[in-house]
Image 1 (cartoon, rainbow, N blue to C red):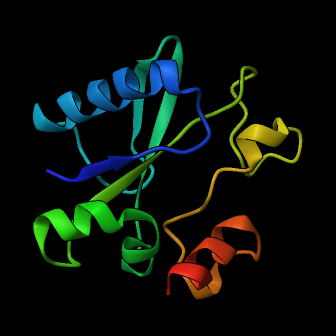
Image 2 (spheres, rainbow, N blue to C red):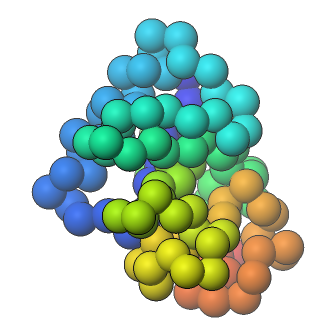
Image 3 (cartoon, one colour):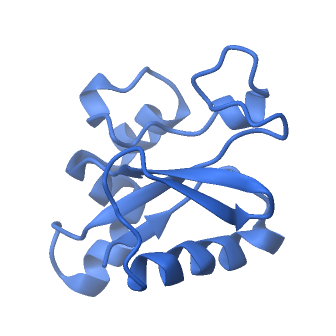
Length: 122
C-alpha cells in the first residue's frame, strides 16, 4: 500500500482525509494514475497520482528515513476547488492551483516553490 501525500489543505481536516484515502487504498481501491476517489473530502472527488521518485527525498525524507530506502511508494491526492475545478483549470482558485504536480519529475515540474524546495533539499 502506498503512502498518501496531500498539499495545501487546512490542517484540521487533513489527517482525516489522508486517513480516509489510506483506508480505501488498504481496502483495495485502485491506484492507477488519475483514479478518482469520491467522498474522501465531503462531496468532492480527489484524484490519485503517483509521486515520481525524484520528489521522495526533498518532500518525504521522514518516510524515506523510516523505511530506510528511497523506493517508498507514494500517491498524491489532488483536490479540486469548491467549484470542482482541478489545478490544471485556469479558473481554479490560486490555492488549488498551487498544488504540486508530483507525478512530474522534479526537473520537468514548472519552476516555483516546489522545485525551490527540492533544490534546497538536494
